[in-house]
Structure formats: structure tokens, C-alpha cells
Length: 143
Image 1 (cartoon, rainbow, N blue to C red):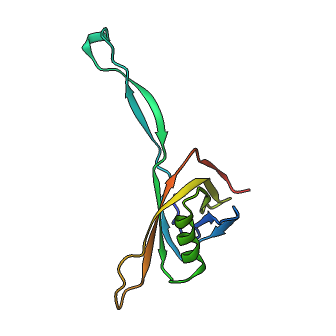
Image 2: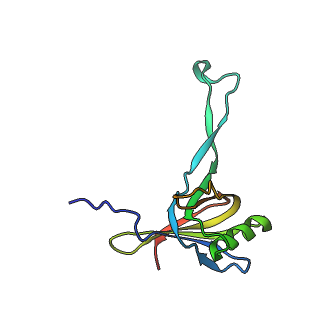
């Protein structure tokens, strides 16, 4: 029997100006950190076999995207716009549903974009929040 699950019940939280985590409402989907390790060339004049050599460099966790049902003037709308205007680093928490205890990913982000998309008759309004990860993230079962 499979242990596969849908994302139903997932949550995304972002810190406010007082460092209190606030759950974003109407979240449709979100991405997770995608750690990539850069490589630094370490080739020298006597590298074996005239081959380039590399060593591991810094780890970049990249960006997160959170898609929401956009509700103009909502608490989530105000929080995102205020975080981007402030230009500060905010805590985040992503909650992933599991059949046992949920899994949490936590760290710090900077809001770098809030694309409120196209507004069209007959279509729901969506917004995409872009967040740049800064520093290391942690992952563990929910407390």
C-alpha cells in the first residue's frame, strides 16, 4: 500500500512586523527550498591529467513561490505588501500534511515579489508571492 499523499491541509505562515507567524489564507500551492551547491574551480598547474578540479562552495536554497486566491485588501494581502515594502527578513513556516504528525519547514525569507496576475471576468483572482530564502532552513516533525 502506498503512503503517497496530496497537499490538502498544507499551510504557509509568514512573520509580521512583530515577528509573530501569521497563517496566509486561501493558499493554493507553495514550493519548498531547493538547495543547490555551487562548485568552485580549484584547478592548478599540476592538476592530474590536465583535468579541471572543483570543490563544493556555498549552498543556495533559492526562492519559494506561494500561490493564493487573491482577495484585495485582505489580511494576507496587507501582510505581503507590508513585508515587501519593509524590505526586512521575515520568519516563515511551511506545514506539510502527513498521515502521522505533520512535517514543518522553517527559516527566513525576504518578500521579493507579489504578482497579483490578470484580473478577468469569469476567472478567479490569484496572486503569486515570491520569497528569497536567506540562511539555513530546518525540517522536523511538528511539535
